Image (tube, rainbow, N blue to C red):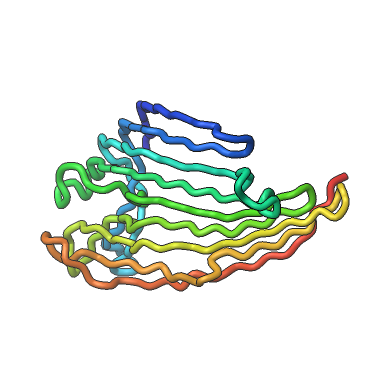
Length: 229
């Protein structure tokens, strides 16, 4: 494995339109060489016959470019009720166009620039929150569009083809309460909707695919207390 080299270009603009509120936009480009891609293939083994190995490899030259936009604000406008002063909303969206030359092992089957592994084209999240001196509450929904998780080949289909994971979202909530200065109680729940991760594998050069795997992702609940001395 070699190092990942990148030349980066960034431009951003931020607008603070009120105390506790801001909006921003940014453009970016990364010219990269050696990005880590994941390849899976069947290889012969003298003891076990055939082993299916998933390994990281350095890719060739590539480019990542896109933009992001977001805002965050408390609901403290003069025309809103004072009751909403400690409530707020935030949202952001990122678009990414990312392609690179695959590692030599797969470049013969997928020539030219192909999609980066584990990079979604669209990423978005939105949240509502409440904050005061002793309490913080937040509910957030995070979404990412489909992405190539790896390029794989098998003995049955020795051509390296993309394994694409479908887009999915996650609803998370968390809360903290600090009844006294040195103690904080907290609770959180992640992936409340229990959305599964599903992927599909291409089986021809036209890009037709079949369902390959479904992983049921757990919902996680936590309760705790933090002490500061």
